[in-house]
Amino acid sequence: MQRPYNFSAGPATMPAEVLAQAAAEMLDWPDAQGHRSGMGVMEMSHRGKEFLSIYEAAEADIRELLAVPAHFKILFMQGGGLAENAIVPMNLSRLRAPEGSKGSADFVVTGSWSEKSSKEAARYCETQVAASAKADGFTSIPAPSTWKLNEQASYVHVCTNETINGVEFHALPDLKALGSDAALVIDFSSHVASRTVDWSKVGLAFGGAQKNLGPAGLTMVVVREDLLGFAQSICPSAFDYKTVADNQSMYNTPPTYSIYMAGLVFQWLKRQGGIAAMEARNIAKAELLYSALDSSALFYNKVHKDCRSRMNVPFFLRDESRNQAFLDGAKAAGLLQLKGHKSVGGMRASIYNAMPIEGVQALVDYMRAFEKNQA
Image 1 (cartoon, rainbow, N blue to C red):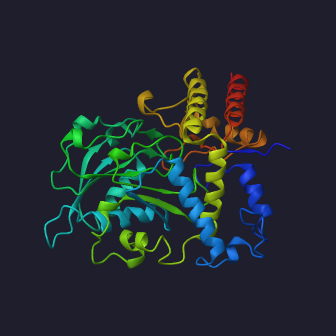
Image 2: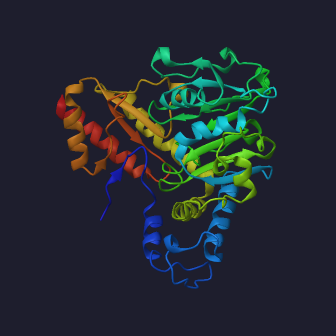
């Protein structure tokens, strides 16, 4: 029986075979050689050999998948992307700051999440909005050549995929080419592992797992080693990146089950052919859905074509009185969680790695049938 297609923005759909494996291993986890532990992963000590093998495999697999260079640390933390909006400035704002100063950071505001990031960071350091797309309703990305960067800023923060507004950076900005020595910080929560990353341009990347990597509860941080050791005195020790790195993400009890589930997703990604293969699939899925929207007289997308997200596709009905009928019919057709974020309205289809192209085709078929019936 075909499961419904879940278009939730996060927590989001996961590969069915990953869920089946986790279910089979729930009461008695086996190691790679098939030896039974007599415990479920939720019951394991995070310092025991069983869980350490899970952790080490997950860290190695995601490093391989994302081609993370050796001089970057991969940290498994908690608190989601929202917590990182505070943890990042507490760790990085003093990178280039004079003694005794809290330091400063620049923000490129391209949607709801980068706007939240800017406001939260202002509690811990000086902040400046170097560029903003708010005036056009967050439907575009300001050209990097127009950014007004602060020469003293320790880092520049961008959300490389805005989950709510459906805007994506398809190429990372090159800060050095813009004359800045600041570190580039990227929030890649909603498109991590959907495409390759040019690590030569990145100082730190962070993302909640609940969209492309696994269940809620795990936050992944990838940080260049030379950025460690600058935490403000007010930074809690469990959120000090150097402390976390020095203790292999085990300074405090990590989100063990979420790490295990993410590890299963990493193995699944490798079986699919890795990130390059997933990127090709994601391009095909996005093209299928945007083509349907662009050819429709009823549905439309507001985002400029050069920065449309491959992961989160907001769309609207020209007659919004039909919204509920659309959602009711979609649910009956096995197409779930299509209501748009409350701050923007309309609809939103999140088509992460685990969403097969058959799910996108089913949505497109339903949209066309709905439009035809409304004519």
